[in-house]
Amino acid sequence: MLIKKPADIKPSEITPESVYRNRRQFMKEGATLLAATAAGSSLPMSALGQDGDALKARAPAELRRSAPAAWWETKFANIKPAPDSEPFYTGESLTPYRDVTSYNNFYEFGMDKSDPSRRSGEFKVDPWSIEISGEVARPGTYQLEDILKPVDLEERIYRLRCVEAWSMVIPWTGFPLADLISRFEPTSKAKYVEFETLVDPEMMPAVNSRFAIVDWPYREGLRMDEAMNPLTFIAVGLYGNYLPAQNGAPLRLVVPWKYGFKSIKSIVRINFRETQPNTTWNDLQAQEYGFYANVNPMVHHPRWRQDMERRLPQTLFSRQYIETRLFNGYADQVAHLYKDMDLSVYY
Ligand SMILES: Nc1nc2c(c(=O)[nH]1)N[C@H]1C(S)=C(S)[C@@H](COP(=O)(O)O)O[C@H]1N2
Ligand SMILES: [Mo]
Image (cartoon, rainbow, N blue to C red; front, side, top):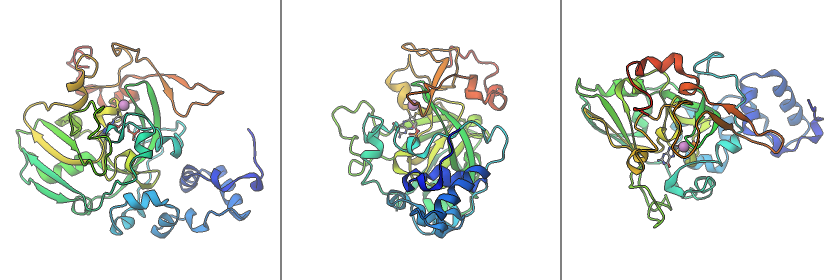
């Protein structure tokens, strides 16, 4: 391993993930970071702390824009760390912050991987409200603040496997979807939950594009037992900081055992229903993208195999091809949900 002298470490190399790992007390990296700071880098000392001011100090301008309001900073100062064991944690290397926030799929901003980070400069999340409708005792339009007030934020380190055969490891901040769902008291008829993304042509430059292939709003859905599974997560942040627009600010779904397209971003509506909802990719191309979309190395996409994946970041020296695992490695937690189903029919 190459060990750098502190003086050789440029401030630009002190990335959010090194700050973040330091917070998780990975001792070696922490020592390097402290040395670098002592050697006079521009990183403020306070950024090593865990309080709200430190967070603000290191939050780039783009993140402050996607922070809904000051009250949220208190929440972010008290994130419960992920346990150091599966399934809410993985010891696999984290995908660097830069890759997580610049290689994205968010078609409302364009179809290139760089479009969401480059073209989301107008995106604002304050005010933000979410409509809760359908088979629930407490429907209504709720402000984001009211949705988040009673939740305790926690961290989950999950694999994210895109149907395009690349993957990342991302430290999310958020709370279990089950906690949110129970608060609205679904009725006994609620068998599925449907989600919708915001459609705002002012802030999302690709929704009115004549090249757009999606019939907006982007929609996704889960069966109720999938939605209530302890792995199913609502993320409001990553790397211990606010969610950038390109990753689905201010809140998005994370379903780690399913292909990434199920993890719908920037949610404005949650609807409870008796019947299976239509979903964006299934509507676009049903032979290629199913409603279930469970990660499965045995069921290939008609145009490419699904038994391998590129773990990002790739470098010139390491292609990082790894084997794709059934249910993305979360089979112990979710295989029972599908025990009587033929996964090649319900793909
Ligand atoms: N609204 C919306 N949500 C979306 C998408 C999208 O285009 N629009 N793309 C999906 C796909 S294909 C993937 S792989 C993940 C990517 O999440 P990330 O950019 O945070 O890694 O977001 C999903 N959620
Ligand atoms: Mo994806």
